[in-house]
Image (cartoon, rainbow over all chains, first blue to last red; front, side):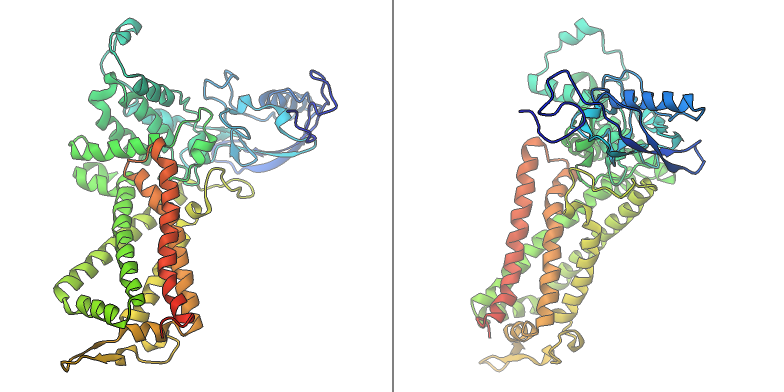
Length: 270
Length: 240
């Protein structure tokens, strides 16, 4: 059914493929460097095609800023198809913006109303210091991976993997967790800035599969400890991370991490 | 951090996940106490003999009473310690919030207010103990000494008349309001906590999550109604 609500883009009276140009006002967090004070600045966008992606809209705004001799808005991006985990802007208070299961690059301007004011902020967490404007340093997640997000022995190549029978359900659960692209939206969405969904996804992804079994408990313990050292908060089972996750990773990966952490103690692997 | 050199059990107990587990286990113990306490209270509907005998039984077995009290106090202290220490760390983890403090999607009001409801419950527990355990006349709004309420037994002894104490205590509208507010917040706290504890213990998977969330709400309502039944019985004149 076509939504009759007036949005930028096609409405009930416009044939498919045709659209109404739209404009929005951006309230953007500008910060020159890591330890500089930041502030909000407001920009009017040029006329936009509602089928532009959110990042294309920012490109258009930046071209305009460059033309005016101003500093463009710095934002992180790479693949622009939702699989690299590089982009990440908090749009109207929601990391990766409106829409379930999509990264910032998969948000389209037709999600917004013509003339709407959109607030853009960086991912907020103590462990994610701002580098510039909307770009944050997410190397804390890399350091968590360095503590256990791998399998220490050579697990073989693709044909070797196929020689180990894995129950369908286990494979599905591991693959679901393996979808995590490490964007950090979970920590950005969590009121406690906890990265448990990320750590849980990595621990589930490796810990569920036979190749990851030998290090399952020590891995969970080491990664959870590193998460704490990086200054991320603790999980209160809010569920905000799950809502923001572009890959819709389930909250149960955190439950599994909690279980493996306790088992690590009991098995003497903590 | 120096915690790294500590023994595994100490590292576990002070880790974020370890403290969540401590919170879950102590919360579970306190919830079981709440259930027993509610069932004990409901003997009021059986009559004064039943509840007075039960109260006398509890109070005359000091070898059971004090270990139970110390255990509950220990649970309460550990629960509050883990909650407050984690809350302070959580606050530090997000020094800058989002513009306009938007409500994070996917969260519930009960989850977001656990710290506030928890502190209010702690205050209520102190009041409640002063009201009916210490029986301080200053907080019962009736201006009566509940210690003086005794029931004579046929064989010459006397025991505390809990039945009359409750009836007199809940004849005061202010006492009833404080009680209902305290129990209400407690049950609101439980509506999140009872499901989240299974997450911390690592047994809440996708199949159980929805069910546990529902059961937590049902159980919280059950406790609320069970506790609220007592002042309701007094106000309606069932218990005189």
